[in-house]
Image (cartoon, rainbow, N blue to C red; front, side):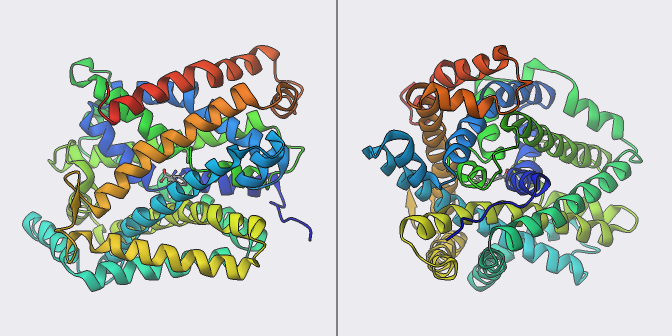
Length: 446
Ligand code: PFF
């Protein structure tokens, strides 16, 4: 049977950018920057993307594109059948865990989009906005219902396959996402305290920046670029042999960072103009933004558009996460796409539903002081993605045949050997040391 792949280079880039751009950029990045002092965080974040993000992304690309197989088959082929291939199961577990807590937040986005469309978010006081969020979180049926509905749509796209489902949807939605962001940015520049907002975001104030900020920036870069859970191995296995991996990695990382920065440009001028605190944390999007929209003229429309933007960004990311276990079942367990998708859907719906109950029925279930949602969120970004990144960087840096790496990275003959050697140096030394250090820090050994 002929293996499917992306039909066009544009489709491949749209799908990969779609995977990278998500809640991580629009929901997580602004609040991380807000909590870590703005400009200094952004500077460190950009350095992390350049020195770690792009090399690790390239290591995933080398594994996927050189074999045109999903992770387990690829490792099998590259190592001549060694047991290393079983590491794939760690990455798949990471993907399922990430997908499960991520789709719970997507469920919140659906609820807020519904509330915005029905006008239920209009004309409220700040206290009421807080109440709306808490009441929603206390309702098990609504939390689970929206999460499951979102997952049904997500897996319906997967059923249609790589070209007709993933590629077509991403090529359609990504331009829409950029269009919406540009509209929001233009609106931002008309805000009374736009300058203060931009100053907060771009001025480098080291007094608010700590070592913890560096670690947050690194974790954020991994989450944002979709690294460490075999996502980009899977997607690059659908790339054509002709595309330049280094150029594509540069484009993806650039667009992903651009969206995160634009999200900040959208959010901070509004936060300052309407008298809110930039350090509002994770609730920034769900409690503060509706209150801000309320004070703007045409507020309801802005609110609806914003949650549409968030939903579009999340859907292309959850699709990429779901394709990881689906492609594994198709290739390694020889299932049809329909059967593989339905099995994955079943597992994810169960885990995500349990996770959606973390704030109500199951809020007493705690481990290491965290509820189920926080636990999955923590395990995903701080353990699985780091472990996966460490694995792919060392694997490509030290184990894969140098000739294969050279061929893949130099597909575009214009790439100077200097750049190629720099990437290999980052994979061999910079990435493993940095990831190991963060990992030790997170598990409390440093
Ligand atoms: N990069 C996505 C975001 O920033 O929201 C999240 C993500 C998608 C992580 C796909 C991992 C992944 F495999």
